[in-house]
Length: 304
Image 1: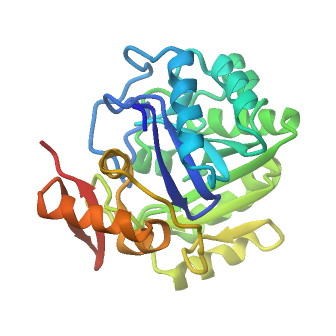
Image 2: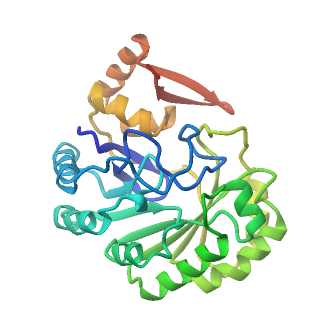
Image 3: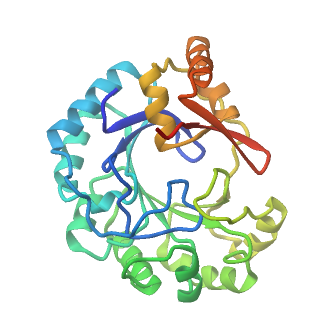
């Protein structure tokens, strides 16, 4: 698999997903979220040395041949994908090679107020936008943005929704002691009806975070979401996933784990028996390591 693709991965929200990383060499993000599974890094509003579109498309085409069971092509980044300067051209070409699969982007919505970003995202099947807080104080504590306010993000999402004909998903990720309050959910209850998303995914930390923050218990999430009755919200869990198994080479295992750690459950769901054998060999060679995060074992590519 090429430099700009990884997976397939088990997405708890969208199924079996082939990922496109638009910033594989370094983290490029205009947020510094407390819960991020990527290592800490300086915030930025650019991607350094962005890859040409044709190189990324070549990687995607080859990966789809090797993993035809992928249901979704997900545009993401080692950071924020809307910082990629050729986004609309890339989306146009991905729509030509996706062959019936859904095209998805995962974004923090911080650049959605820019007309060129909105224009590009209008061409995607599913747009997933993060909205972890509805108040400025909470937003600054969790997402720690470079230079945008939560009001700007909310207004831009509302504007985008009025034009977008695809599936709009809002994701709220809860962090213990910050946005898991009734006050914040009362603010969500005012904002979310104005957005009119097709689905609102509400979850909490389930992978090792960059900072020392913790997940919110399911029972508390259930109580908080009573403020959102009547809205299309979904409390995200991993129960019931039965994705098709796939063959992963050594290179694909290392590349994927470097971008998104897998839990033992992920490996059981997605790896065929030969891939599990290769993983065992990589563990013995110390090219992959395990990390215990709140009782859940994750596999990481070992830093060299």
